[in-house]
Length: 125
Image (cartoon, rainbow, N blue to C red; front, side, top):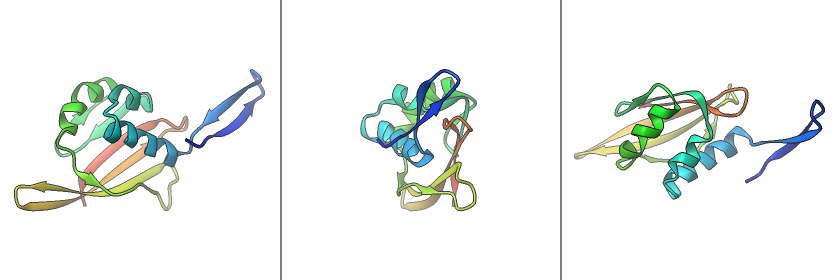
């Protein structure tokens, strides 16, 4: 992973921060590649929210408890795109097959000031 090191002159320790795009890619790799939900949860804000047609979570603990079961039948998504007007937002398009019907979806990932994932919203496109 790429990171940018900056100096924090208050405590003289370097701080490593990931770009939102790199954090988003890392989050998805932990979910899709390794099924490492606990590792992915480390990238979420404490007051994280998840909203989708199939599952909602009011905080990180709710997500960690319910998301792994829901993720077994996940949509197929394309790559992440940085928001045109808001660099704290990533989106990705996807499809979900239900029976003989394919639904178009969009997933919106929003970040807080600390670079943690604040919310993920999935909805029909």
